[in-house]
Image (cartoon, rainbow, N blue to C red; front, side, top):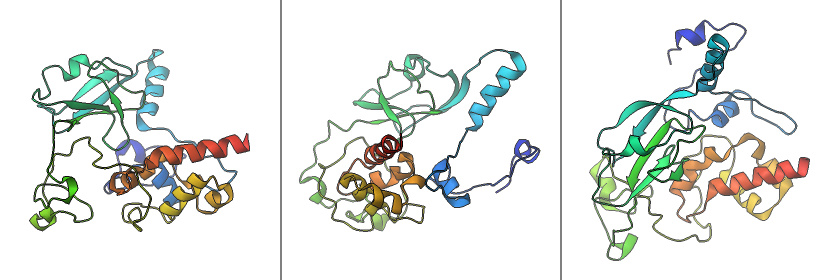
Length: 255
């Protein structure tokens, strides 16, 4: 991938460029492929926007937290970029620019790792994207996921829609099922970009087995690295929450 001129001209740095679909942009994935973290190591990261904020402060003496935010989602009438300050009120961003014929889920961030907000909420401290998708609470489907369909997205080819080739789907906020035992194997492996066993790591965290967590590479991961695992999980497990709890457990043990 071609590197930007600003990065190429930087001094006293080693430049490594990443390209590809999500989660190629996650810092956890990048660190894992450059120099995996082991017990006792600390890795500091900073985003390009944070560098920009610091640069503005140094050059002008003023704190300017304005950032470019993408307004996205299937229910946004006119997707666009806008300039917002961190913590900005979102009322004017959404007003008149979303569909009004259904209940909506407003997200500060993206659909995988963002947080639910109200249409009168505020932009998250680290978010550069706003997303609006259908809530889906008005939909009642006969026989639920058992009914064969041609218009539903499925990772596991549970519907005939996989025969239709690549197409765009409007995906709502429904979980479509309750949490259950983790029985399906290799679901996470297909979407996890690191050379570790995500399913076994999650089970070790649930069991509170710190030694096994360390052996399975918990120091190399962040909750956002498991966002796709959570999306494809047929057991409806809140994988990101579990990984966050595991990391907090380790921090408490080492304190």
